[in-house]
Image 1 (cartoon, rainbow, N blue to C red):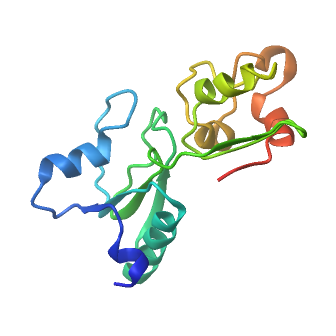
Image 2 (cartoon, rainbow, N blue to C red; image 1 turned 90 degrees about the vertical axis):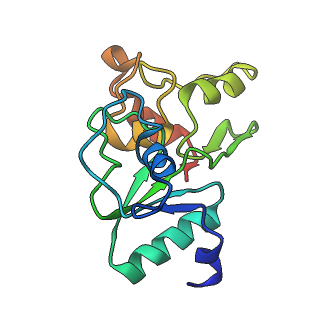
Length: 166
């Protein structure tokens, strides 16, 4: 293991702490479904270096990588057999460039969190029907939201207005 991997907040499937592994695997799934899929490991990233270390480890072990932003996928797509699951729930970033009206957010930032900041500036983000959806999954997986019927899929407009989701 290199230095990045040594500091990873990681739990392996074959850990002796079965309860902690199960919580890391399914604890942030919004619908409480429990898929019969088991990642080789789960990294609960709280900084970019954790993500980098997880990807390096996946390369070394020839594992696939799955990512969980907010845990709002009905089918629980982030829970993959024999993959490393990078859970971004503890990776927080929300910056607003008021002059340009551009927000830079981490993927697990929810529409509710973003609008709480934007609302104080007279701005809003046309997010999903549920305010607890992580923006990473919203923008990459669906983009259906409240203004969709009149103004197209929300993510089409959001990608033009958001600087980046990382």
